Length: 360
Image (cartoon, rainbow, N blue to C red; front, side, top):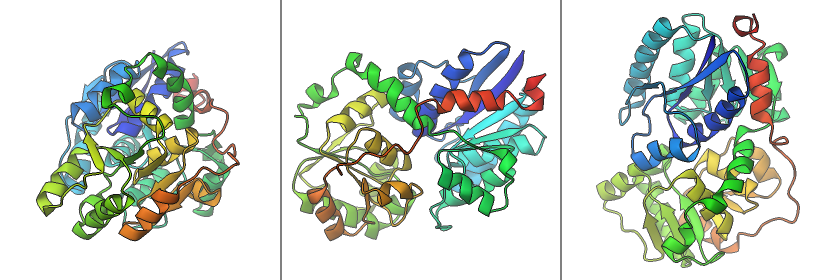
């Protein structure tokens, strides 16, 4: 039996790997297993997702989190190398741009196991971001590069990567939004639990290191939230909670902090929000899938097409810009088809199975 391993460690990766796992489950003569690095170690950020997404528990749990970038990546690399040498998977799939992504790719490629990178070719053009370095390095060591759209494929070829390695497949997050949106009607009603009226709140997420590790930026964001005045619901990431306490920053009265929620509950909150405010890459797209205007708390984004078509506004961490954008946020009239037809995971699996190690 052939074996393919997916490396995951953060919330968006669990979702992406879930639809890929379901696509592999429809195949014969190949096993698909997860390695969970532990990059997100909080139960609400991690464990609950596996039940909700209806995927098997990871075959390997590394429990590596809460470290510096170098220490985290190094320990992941060391432990995954040992796993790959022992288990000898026929291919390794990595997702997105986290430390788990880079460590999984390096561990596999150094012992000559083919690597497939999902969400290849995205660039923020800001190399000060650790995620940008992770993206670039992973793309350049991978054997198969799955681009969500033509612009990402063009970027890869501009960097000298052969076209034979690149496939434009659409976005697995779009697959997931379709699959799991249908199931949210049977999920617990998070709006009733929080006593929220549809359309009465903005939904926010704040977790990216460039924002949380800077007192100036974090204070600017929460001051901007205060200036909005209207209700903002914020599932609070553990990193952000810690930094608010470290910097001694107050949470405005109009910001309602809640614990991190599962994927289905998040989809409900997104669907019924007036707008979405985030520094997450994945949530920017989820907002678009839910046809909600998005305000992005960053100075650049890898999803430039959402800015170009008017569904996303980049505002950075300046309080006045945040308040103005959130207050005036409105959905454009046109919703372009940017990310395929919802079958990216099937296309990815079909291409992975053509690798020499799996095709025999």
